[in-house]
Length: 137
View 1 (tube, rainbow, N blue to C red):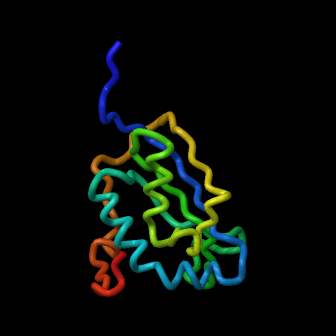
View 2 (cartoon, one colour):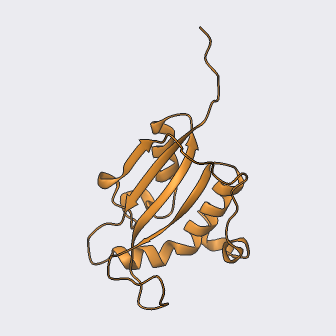
View 3 (cartoon, rainbow, N blue to C red):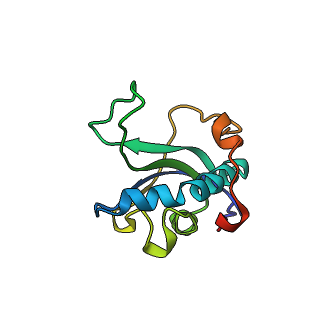
């Protein structure tokens, strides 16, 4: 029996933010680096889909106020361990000191009922994102 070396599979990821008072500030402080990392991972085909999750009180039809409470993504990876390593390389993790609560991550293999966009594309705002060199991870 042969196995396909390097095969990638979709994984759904829910990465909630920590509940502490500093989580939102940690998210804001690392946002540019996180978005640059996200843009690169989409470009590399590692992330097929992703975005921030708003709390229940946020109205997506109105610009303010909105409160982000986590992230949802679909990764293309060979294993759950690879997904964990990718999450740990993100600025929102920051060696356990960032916004994401690693103890609450949900990482599940995904059986798709519809096709994901191929290739995935980031929004125009993220394409144009400029990260100062001293901010890069």
